[in-house]
Length: 395
Ligand code: PLP
Image 1 (cartoon, rainbow, N blue to C red):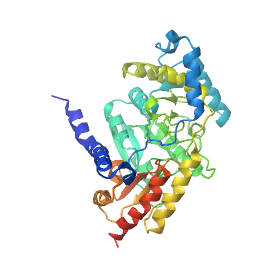
Image 2 (cartoon, rainbow, N blue to C red):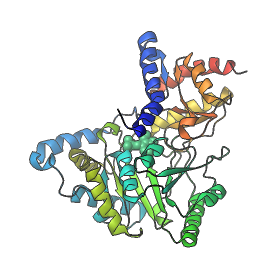
Image 3 (cartoon, rainbow, N blue to C red):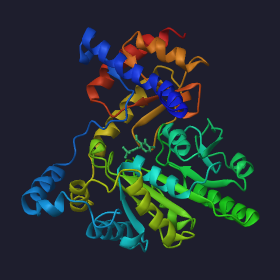
Image 4 (cartoon, rainbow, N blue to C red):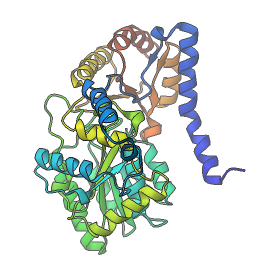
């Protein structure tokens, strides 16, 4: 008999699995080129050539015993953590040292490590809808309680008045994700400043520490030169979770890092806790080869112009067809208003045209759907006439 918690998790994950199986079924029946799968955030731009070069070089030159061994510290190789700190300091004018960096098994691993380190049962974790649905499971892993702030469907910036009201003495963490999955919104500097002011005020009022967790796997995916503020500058109790899954197209390699700055309350203890959490969650350490690879590729970037062309084509195409959505400033998702209140029905109707999209209720925002445009450009071009047929069903 599996645990009650897992019973629920398995039941809830069946929708994602069903979508995946549906994609395979449609591809087998109609041919992959006739299926328009916008359901997954799996980058389709290959990793930069430098990644492959670095892997080959590291494999040929490094001592295999060291390279494939456990790292001395569960937080990762010292030289890699120092290189990450130096790179951040250069880019954002911060003052991090290797002690502030924990190498992680992607952003998902990092979030689990920090939540494991912070949460007591019943502690509240605040999230802004729409949000990455996995946060619910990650908080639940440590008996945390998710508190949702309802979406501002005009701008998809966080609703700060509701935020202020919902903070409580039990609030231990707030997760923000900018550029955002699923909306593509980048939180403005003004928003971040206001959010920081509210957090400062509430910490004083309750006499507690509230940790702001910035989940930023999409930091490098920002269009039109838009600035993505570095949050540690605005609020002392900020922890950053980064990932190379999207920035270097390495989602299967499972590599990222956490930044826990000295300014964070109990920083030394929290860094030590992250180290131990990495071990006892069973990660032990982030993959050693990939640590070395990202060290060599800290200045590399994915080909963002590819996603940008997809963004323009899908956004403009859907707008012309009468769909409502805001133009994403980052990441590779479009969050589109469903023409009917029940967006699951809309997703099902889309399937008739071999279009696979994800209901907004998976992100705490029913009435909307998410389309991941990290697909081949041709997929978008060929999907638009199908979207036109789909739109006609709702006229
Ligand atoms: N956070 C957000 C907002 C994401 O969209 C994802 C993956 O899509 C993750 C975390 C997990 O990323 P990783 O593959 O680095 O674990």
